[in-house]
Image 1: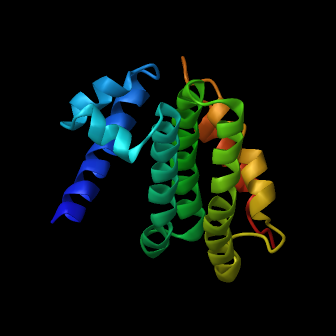
Image 2: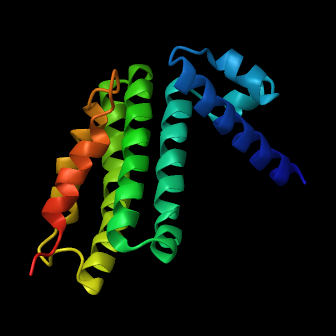
Length: 178
């Protein structure tokens, strides 16, 4: 029972931190503990530093995003699944950028390195599905795609979000043309 409670506390802390830090990157850990309905000691047992908490929020977001790939591929054609997933990735990267203020440069680099392999694997699944059905060109590379799409999360969100239009151009370049 204690392990179940500990897992639930950790999940509540991550959920509260995700929401609070998205709204205000400077939210204190004490405020996050309050929002999660746990004591500060419980928060610090799970996340000994604020940076550890921020990294866990980011890693949790990456894992959630990667887990959506199989479901997207059962519901959508590969190019549409890739479009949808990439826009979710853009939103996650925008949130990560907001969390970046809470991370040291070394921690920011570590988070990027830790997520690179799983993100490339997810992109490979999406691109391979499109290669199999003939909608995506055979030479499409997940590393190239990730590098191209890195500009999307930086695209201005006001007054107009340019990311969807820019993504349409990138995806058009991926299409297999007869």
